[in-house]
Image 1 (tube, rainbow, N blue to C red):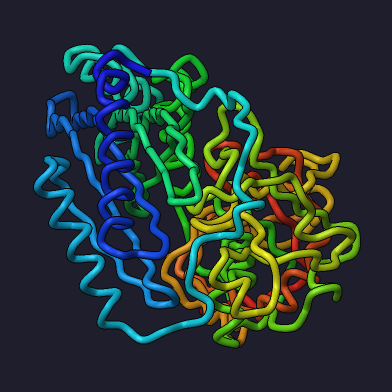
Image 2 (cartoon, rainbow, N blue to C red):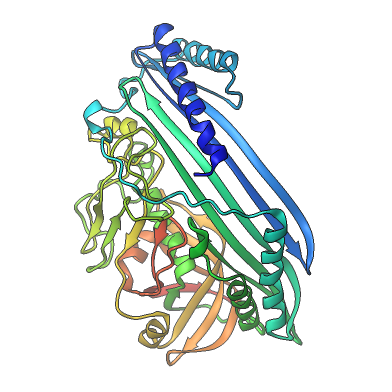
Length: 445
């Protein structure tokens, strides 16, 4: 953690403790508070010229109070003592004027985290504006120079963010978590006689030394844009489909939404009452791995302070667990799973083949590299999204395709996964390789 944020840690912790003390003094039976401080630098260039330079710095405090089973919340961006006091009063007023809900309350004390391993989440990048601009220029230049058909650019960007979060409650829990996230990205436009195509690439990591080089990011963006030149439509058909790893994560994101507590107790999910039943193809294993070092979703406790744990969400295709915070767990008559705020590093177990191997295994079908729109209904599982990618014949990419739609039902699509690639994308909270699915409906000409 940088000196600037380290100097602020005690102040954030004091603000949280003061908010809790004032809530108790006001008659609250329980309370929780969270404070955060973040700072960052975002720079973008286009065609070699600086487009934006943005310094960000923000802080906030959120307070939740309980008067028995009545709940109220308020927040502020001003951590001065008077503002903290006003925020607590506002939360108390709201709580006193809301209805009772027997599921409201802090998590059970025995579920709070007591061990806090170093997950190596904080690695500041000593980066000034001039250095960031130079990195962005190197990235864009490498891409533009890679192929004469790269005619234009939507720009390259460099981002570095450092944050500190403090969470406390009246059960005696108080913890601070510093973290960083850095990225380099580039989006380029290629042209040939048939027209123009755009594509992009990016790298993201908590440690700046684990980022791909600016040149490799730019060249990857260029290659992807060039590969899409000459895109065409295909006729409507049913075919095998491979979701390239960066877009495959979206399928698993729909899965997470379907097993989220709020979807379950509202009975608004196609996976309602599916615990212990096959929901994926046999052999599919999906884990939650909150203790991966330097990973995007790593955390030793959730947004309520509940301890996280390694666990299987799916084993051999069978649903093993849900994503529950304390409120949802009580609504469902279950125990919290430590998922207030979401999942922590979802990992689908990879197979033995890389993307090229999956193409050979598929033989003929569609490789999806981009998804467009959000035509997904998690209540019914109905799925329909615009897509672009490549048509594959005999295990080899034949030509790029666009203006098509891939459709199905998630309940069926999950069971149609034939293989998971070993080309795992580790940039986000969902870690997956490319996914090969059996025949899906493809709408085209």
